[in-house]
Length: 245
View (cartoon, one colour):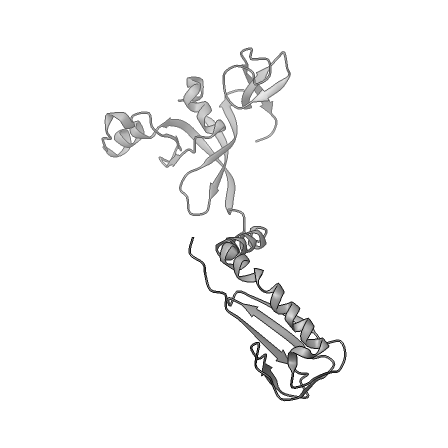
């Protein structure tokens, strides 16, 4: 495995009143006598990927022989500790990009707006889209598209394609829902022409009835015909009269 060369830079920064910034000399070089004022900082940057600062707690005199001074021992320790920095940077450099990306996503996740939609009711009959297109407009679709999409056809002739989630699929699984007058409470999401069924009502001469499926054993309602989600016994179609319009 090739070894990467560690590069680091250490800067002694005096308080703002001094207005000076002095690079730390390499071992074997000696700076002129200097005074590090209280509040000075030593900043260490390794491989241009991390910077750490150490604050000077009290006024320190750094003589010409930097490495014979007590403060030089502290700086030497800083240099010794920096030996591991390049290795950490080499192995975690790519991870840092991923971490920053995940952090940004986490921060923005709570601010993402939910899809906008409008909720309204439509009346008509549920039909196969392919059949309605041929009947209404003379458009012939390929044979495999005959029962590919369901749509609500309104008395005015509008066709509203239905999203086939559990509610929408009930029209495919139970033919009793097709070709009868219904009212659908639906959602239409901004930017989509399709409708999502929320509730199904049958419109009969003697009133309006909400339709769903019911298990008499478990006393739970379901969205589509089939075995009960709990006991696996067959459910039944339930009609509940709705008072009002």
